[in-house]
Length: 322
Image (cartoon, rainbow, N blue to C red):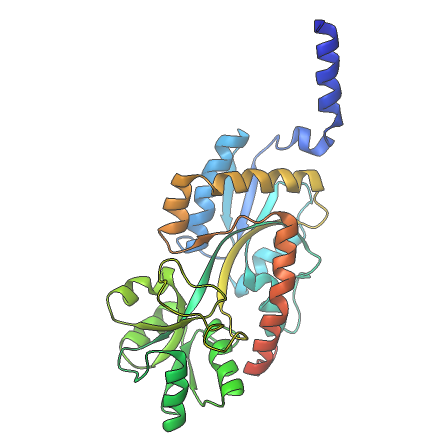
């Protein structure tokens, strides 16, 4: 093939690519988090930022903007230029829980973001102190009915996963578990291990070591599929309570209006990084997550499918927007 013809074909191929994808990125990219440094999402995103910096040849900077259940960070990204240079490391709460907990939001959970991917996910176990006279969820329900109101569950506030789980049980199964709020996940787990409260929920990432040490026990996993790390623990669906689901996931989004070609490129590059065996081992498996790596369309569908679940559980818990 003549060199001139080959050059012309290459030029035609490049020119057929969407312009934003050809040039992006030509400057540093920022990923904003609504959590403080050091937590699971922060560690995951910093690992991802290092991978993307190498791949893109541009700095990928992580900026923590904690506070107000992620509202501060969400508002900032929602109002950022939709050019792909400001990204948002999200949690399911941004899309699902917050709309039922707050009367008003500084962003629209359905319209403010162009979803890129759900990176990782962890289902939540129904946890009990070893002294609780039950080994399964049906046995727990039976134990409560024998002595109603004798078992308390710890939460980190109204609308948190343990609040939704146990109040949904109270409504659907006729139990009378008592709600005891604490100021965070760690105080709840400490209280649970000390038998100050008898029940709560938690992922393998936060409760796995306590489960393996026998300081807590798992009565069920609030999911549709069993955990590969704890395959002997049955799901709530298996035990006759498919309406009870509890999970947390970490996603990545851009401001709404970001060019589709840029969103697709970021998604493809992020998913490629997530699927590297060394990355999975260090940033996904070790902290107890499952790698998800959804496409933008799959992310949209995931949010759509989980919204009615959280809506119904929030209603069962009687959460009043503040």
